[in-house]
Every structure is written in C-alpha cells, then in structure tokens.
Amino acid sequence: MTRAVISCFKNGSIKGFDIKGHAGAAKDGEYDMICAAISAIGYTALGGLDELCGLNTYKESSGNLSMTLPDRMTDENRAKAQIILKTMVIGLRQIENQYSRHIQVSFKEV
Image (tube, rainbow, N blue to C red; front, side, top):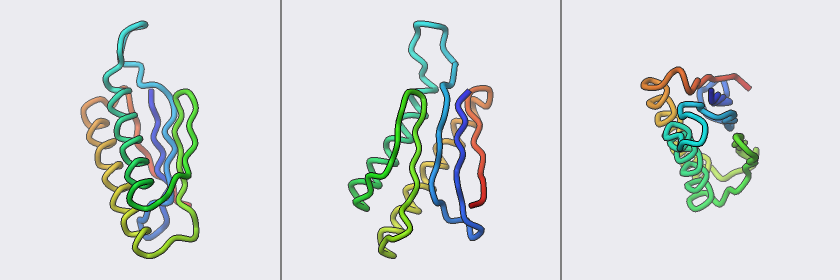
C-alpha cells in the first residue's frame, strides 16, 4: 500500500508531503497503473513547484517521494505552491476514493 502523509499547519496550509510505498495493485512483473497514477500526480506537483515557484527541494528513492516547502518564500510563490499542493492532494484523494486498498492519504499537523 502507498501511504501519502500531507503535513499541514493549523490554518490548513500545506508544509510538505511524504509518499511512501508501492500500491501493490498489479501482479509481480505487471505494470501497476495505480502506482503510476500516484507517481504522476506527485511528480507533476514537483514540476509545478519547480517551474512556477523555483523550488526544487524534494527527495526521492525507490518507492519514496517527499518534499517540504522552505520557510522563506515570497508571498506570491507561497500562494502558488499552496494551489499546486492542494491540487495534488485532490488528485491523490480521488485515487484513494476508487482504490482505498492501495493508497491511504492522511494529514498531520506540524
């Protein structure tokens, strides 16, 4: 199962995320479409943060993708980043609604 943990402040703004694990929806040796969808959403968010906000502060390893927004950002870039990250959460939750056996989205307050 993939676990996506979204780190949020009390006011609801997103600080970062950590996506870990493989969805495990496909048989061994087959292509896992759910895992691919989760990855596509995560990497699209990272691409948006890079191209629109100039942020390239993520970490990745096999089955893991994480990112934390820096403390110092312009108000404009922070607003853009929130839109990108909240859109990412919408996408992940839509996958969770259909495939809850393969992805769990949760939130933790920071």
